[in-house]
Structures are given as C-alpha cells and as structure tokens.
Image (tube, rainbow, N blue to C red; front, side, top):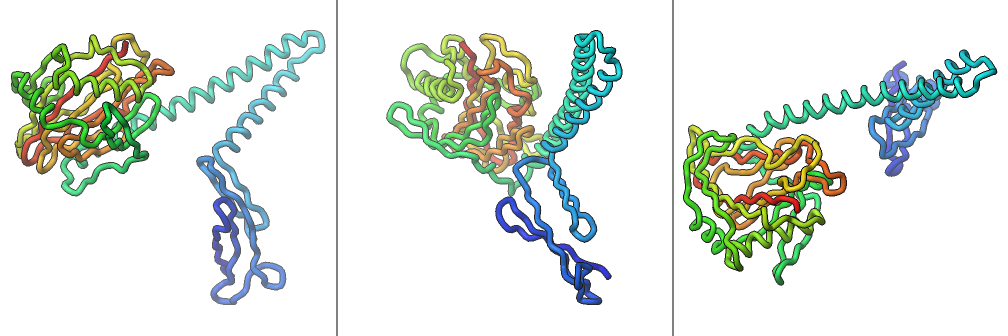
Length: 352
C-alpha cells in the first residue's frame, strides 16, 4: 500500500503534513486506517531541512543555526572530555589551559573551512558574472534591474528621483533620473579634445579629459551637484580640490567590434584597506544613449542599466565605517554600442 504525502501552509511559518490514502485501497496505515497528520514550523534561517519519519511519527527540522549550535556543543563536549582525561587533580590551571587550547584549535579549523567556502562561492560568482555580462550586453530584450528602493533627493530647489539598485556598506549603485541638462553635456563636450583609445585599460572609445574650471560655471555646478550627492550618500566629504578631473567618452557604432569599456573597477575593489586620497566613488552621466546596446552592466552584483538621456549612475566602492574597499560588486562593464552613439561624462571622486 502506497500512501501519499502532502504539506499544507497553515500560516507564514506553520505547516501541516498529512498522509493521503493509497490509490489502490483508499486507506492509510494509521489506526483504523486513518491518515496521520504532522505539524512543523519554518523560520527565517537558511539551509532548512525537514525530515519526515515513516508514518509522520517524527518530524525533524534543522537549519544553519541549529547545525552551528550542535557543532559548537559537540566541540565543547569533546574538548571537555579531553581536558578531564588530562586532569590530575593538582593543576586545575593546566586543565583549563588545555580546554581553551582545544577550543581555539577547533574554532580556528571551523573558521578556515568557512573561509574556504566563502572564497569558493565568491570565485564562482565572479566567474559566472563575467560570462553573463556578455549575454546581458548583447540581449536586445534585457531590461533594467528593478530598484530595491525609490526615493527623492533635493538639491538647489530641484528634486531628483533616485532608484537604489544595490545598497551595501562598501558598494552602492544608484540610478538618478534627469540628473544633467543638455547644456551641461554640451559644456563638457566642448571643453575636451577627443582621442581614439583602442584597448588601453580595456577601453575602446574616443576620450577627452579636462580639469573642472574654477568659478561657478556650468561644469562647476554639475560637479558640485555630484559631490553633494556623494557626500550625502556616504556621509563623508568628497575632496573637491583633488576631485577635479572630468572625462568625456564617445562610443561609436561598430557592429563587428562594438565600442565598449571592458569590466573594470574605477578604484580598488579587492576588499583591501582604504588609503586617504584614493578614489571612493564615480558618476557616469548619459548625454546620448545608443539605439541598440550601450547599456551599463555590473556583473558581480547582477545590476543592468538601460540608460535614458540626462540620467546618471552613482556607484561607490568604499565603506567609510570600516575603511575598506568594495570586494568586487562595483566592477562595471560599459556594453558595446550596436546601433547609434553613446556619449557620457565620467567623474571619479576622492576622499578628503
């Protein structure tokens, strides 16, 4: 006789499992051919496993927290037993030292094992992300990543709509609608001399650099707005004296070899310690958007941006509280232009 098992959601955390009658006999194996019922709970922890015994007489639920507690209890019991074996009754301090040494060794081993697992998962994520970037850049149907939070930022009596796409202490990615005007784009474009870049640091585009003019001109106001947003987002001041370089990039159409900027980090993104004066955040303003392609892709964080003219992205790669850099989540690719042109303003900011 083959019984069937079905679980029913009773509430957000409480579930019920019950046997169903066998198809051939129409009966269950419970007393008087009744179908047994069992109850269990799920929670917010990870790696949950529910094991049902035959007849639902026993239901065992475990998760990552329970397993960690059981492992810690087992380690403590083993170390305690080892220390008691060495206990002579004369030197209690030596026994305690032995117990602590055993615990230290066990914890160190568990930490090394967990570190290896984290490093493996990180390498796997990075390798998969780099492969997926190619598909995302050439997929005509790819859409922009949905925001995790929408908010409004006010500056000089103007409100800007912000879409937070990624928000971690050392890695933030925000999309800002209608951030720059055509006048501001024209001012930067008119202030640089373009040169063809073919592969230097992974860049394939026409690029021109300039220093922000002193005074309160159009370009200065744009950069000041960028610094204000960065300062409010990171809650630390941007060094306006050393953050004065602005770049203009023109990615032209090339179906055979699309104009692009290969995966790169604007600053350090290896989780290392921050040094004063290093780059901590970047802005990219989209002054002209390609008809096809030309998107922006953050492969390690799974963020894809299909920009509109006048919009901007802000991404930071530094945690001001721990003083360490991002661990790769802001590694960015400027996808190739398949049709049309893509023209952007790029500005990197330094810490004070």
